[in-house]
Image: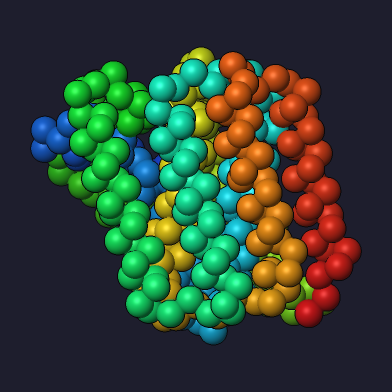
Length: 319
């Protein structure tokens, strides 16, 4: 048990540091190769912050622990909204002023509906998984075309600016990118292997561990980038990071894992947490579209709700 806990802690540290190093290296490498900031924010940053979820979910599915993979997606989406708003919104109220929020919010609701519809069947197969990945690529291409005219003023370009690393040479940036990826892969393996043992020893299901411990750990990169954006009063960047990460989780990560390994959906998640995620997502989008900013009392409520969800998982999470 002690070794498993150490494995989980080491995995969390490697996931967070690896993702941070990988993103900064990839941004510097892309800039050195004259890639536009708009494209960097749309692809490199979006993939980088979701890399822990991807590698952890893939490792879990291939290791015979699909409940951790699904729990990670659902739990990460809940953490990205409730924990991030609850943490960041208390420190600095988040402005909801981006002209792209309607498009991004609609895309998130549509992606969540697709994920929920697929989940109730009990299994997401390779064909549907590939369709989900294709839908994500289509959405990214649409965003690229619609926001290209904004140039460096697009929300994706300003998101890339949060990771500016002009001082890195191309060889160093490439080495940093590769090193970060290696750290994330190792971290994913340590986290999943340790989480399986911890779940068995604690007497809770793998789905519970996926929704709580694993999801929290894989959401740390998004929390860090959202906090930085909010402290700099870049509310649209903070919201774009939350929405973009959840779209990547729902379509990209679920789709990629299902395409390669197939993805059975635990009935326990379909019964409760899936619909909780849907309700939280719809409420979040509605708030961002109708409010000028997210007030601190609402942020506190989000944090308390997240804490209640985590507590309820362990109270009723027996295998």
